[in-house]
Length: 565
Ligand code: C2E
Ligand code: CA
Ligand code: CA
Image (cartoon, rainbow, N blue to C red; front, side, top):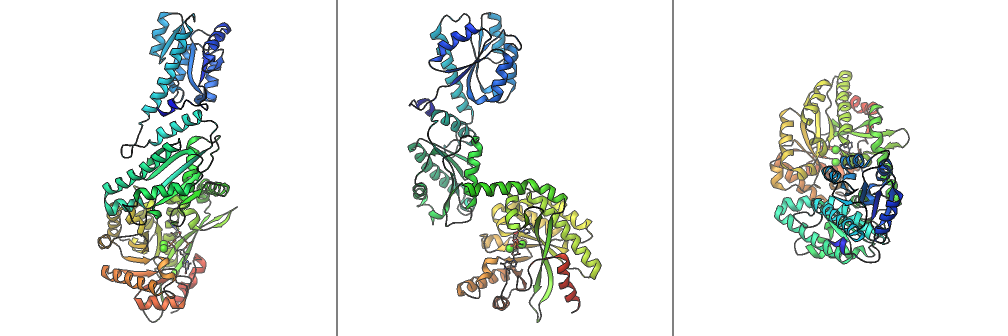
């Protein structure tokens, strides 16, 4: 194993815990082992357990006397072997009785050293062998390496990082996370085998780099790689190497990578946490293809703390109704005069200390941990009750569209849940339009299509949100069960200033006509945009041109206006 061979000056001595009540014996063992190991002493079982609990990872071996006051060796052995962390530390029993040997081996000791200690070389050799064996076993048992790439698996990698720190206590290390942008699309469009090939190429480059730098590399899940290497001075060069590894396979290979670096890690942080920081940095540039590298720094730490705060506060916020639903009108522009047809429910968080928080701050965060589902259920209920309230007050039904996150669709009860929300609020599923982003379809494929079919069978109408930026293939679109396409805001933004963008719009409209679905354009701010959208055949318009999202009571103005004719 590599660690075993790192016999340079940095390697630190392993620590042996000697549990023995007689000071003569303590001194003897200290003398025998002291040249090769750091010895710590416990005078009885209780003290031993206390030391072990305080810092289990410090000890490479326990030498355990059986007869001691307070808590004897058997009891220590039992507690150690029962504990999931402590049980990894090998125990050698110190004894003068044959019977005791059998018993302690049964209890999980790996070896024994007979008293009196008259063969120092033998004792030293046994201790050495036991520690080496146990370290090798630890490494091997952690399911070693990932079959596809041959890199270490996460579990093994983290274990190795620990050993690495022990071996190189004075070298500054970086924790690095590397991810492939939109890897699922590579799989989807070129097939899994091709995707595997890409992963292998990336893995090979990372392994070569790690070896050269005396570091280690791992693949932790699909397309996430972690590395632990001495401080990287020129991270761009590392990206260059990765790019070089795949440049014959993919177009625009430079846009494929994002890398998060937590430089010169603080070793006081536990090991998984150091890589969380690297991953956080890496995720901070997801979708920003102009920036392949991000460093974990104080600002990011602040951001992370803020995010943590939001996550911690959600439950309370839901109880106290701090989430408020705003409504933005949608107008049908087919006729002479724009006509109010529905509204989109958009959530905001009125946080008592942090103020009004926009959904694009917290929704993506809550999508990462599933909390979005709780928020969304709250919004769906509110929206459904609002439809009912307006109907009761004005005797008209104004359908409201709600956003359904990709994460919501993964909830096993989603279908029944949302149906029940509609029914118990006194409206019908047709009064709720469900906006599902295009990327949900392209990320998860088949299951979503089935689910959306089921939703429509129950009477819900489904709108494909953010259309145009999710890379649906035409083939996929034709098999999609949707009622409405909602053009992504990005397509609308420049249609009045860029001919090329207007060309795109016409293309989208061709697709919509081919699918015979209604088209909604959002983010419409200017008269010129409205005119061009109308000209292209868009049915429904949403945007600041008509109104920004409003609280329910202010929104009522639009209903009253509609009724006034
Ligand atoms: P979205 O679903 O694409 O919603 C449209 C966003 O565009 C809204 O931002 C809206 O206020 C904004 N917008 C509307 N008209 C204009 C315009 O003319 N110009 C510009 N520049 N922007 C306009 P908002 O409310 O900040 O929401 C942002 C995103 O947060 C939403 O994008 C949606 O993805 C998410 N979101 C909002 N509410 C919910 C919710 O209840 N559940 C879920 N899962 N996501 C939500
Ligand atoms: Ca939406
Ligand atoms: Ca949208």
